[in-house]
Image (tube, rainbow, N blue to C red; front, side, top):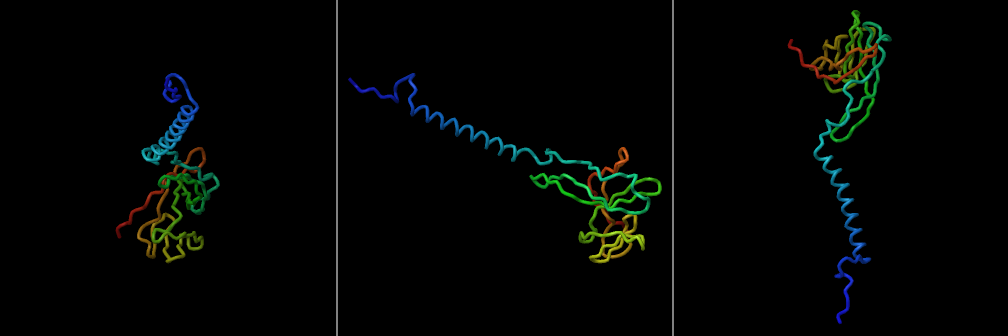
Length: 172
């Protein structure tokens, strides 16, 4: 009579078969979890992730006409595959007619932060002395184009800012 081999007996679960099956099940779970994450990372573009198109920059009723104010606000943006929440600013000008213009915070020459000079009624960049009018147009200096502008709209008394639009150089 031949000795029985527990590995070859049909219908009977051995301890070894159970542990091998458990190991294969764990490998399957780990591979599935990593595989799904990798596929989402590779094939779902970052533009489909949540990104705010319009952000609340503040109350328009507090703005004084023809007196630019630097407003700070928080914006969520997608940078490659990362979603970042960052604080940024805009120079906001309210016109006599009640319209609102919002300028990007960087000079169009080399990206320095400019400021409003109330005495001369103009924006001045301290890095290379570019000067901009209250409308954002270049008055003097090395700046090649007017100040960049945010898309702006007023909803329920709140200033909503959209994307920053790069301005084009004006022909002389």
